[in-house]
Length: 317
Image 1 (cartoon, helix red, strand yellow):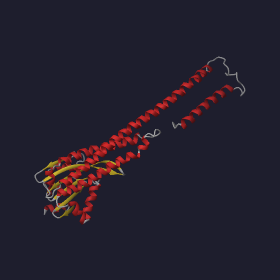
Image 2 (cartoon, helix red, strand yellow):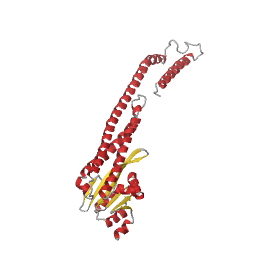
Image 3 (tube, one colour):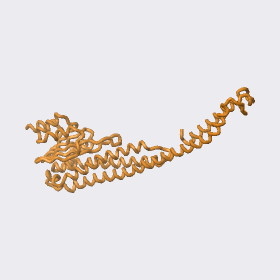
Image 4 (tube, rainbow, N blue to C red):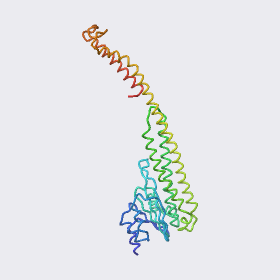
């Protein structure tokens, strides 16, 4: 009777002799209630309250505790990693997570509303339900990995365009790829540690082929990320080479301009001396008393305007 009272505090689904309890946004009170319903270790209950636990498997005589990490998609971009904790025993499965793990929450709502889908997803054991949950989340991982790789295609034209710098986009994609790999590789290791004995422990049907398929999907996601990592490194090197080449061209032109300005600098230094020279004060007067100043200012302004036009033409400014 006490278990039924505590169960009423949670969202739960029953299918045959199996109950699925979902706990989004766990807190101390919810974990205490779970501890009263099932013989869960207090350290595992504390792990559910943390968002930074490593992926692991803890085995007990009557249940298994598992922590896995999955990516979260926000605004068509991989945003962060979310933690999923699973208590799996004979006749029950408890999932504990934050409310940002939308694929799991959608799966729970589908099972709650649709009898046919509930029978399909929950099957006849907690082991099969665990497979259904992990399979849905791993498929989401594969889709996110493909999306990140697709985003690389969108910036490919910019990378190979010498006039455009794509360093910011490249850095952002590199960060996404590395974050996904840091999550996917431990996930693969944890699922590989989840051996055949664990798979069959709470199920009378053969679940090994199902979990082998999930492991293959994780491996596929890692392959996609590895390919994306290799490609983004090529993009980074290409963008760097284009940037260096552009800088070298600019330095070359500036060097030419500086070299061509040396004679004018030398001549102007003579006119700054207190000696009589052709064109100095009083020597030219066809524009009045300030003819020399007007001529020098006009020539200097014309040269500056020509340089400004040229820099704008070659897109330096």
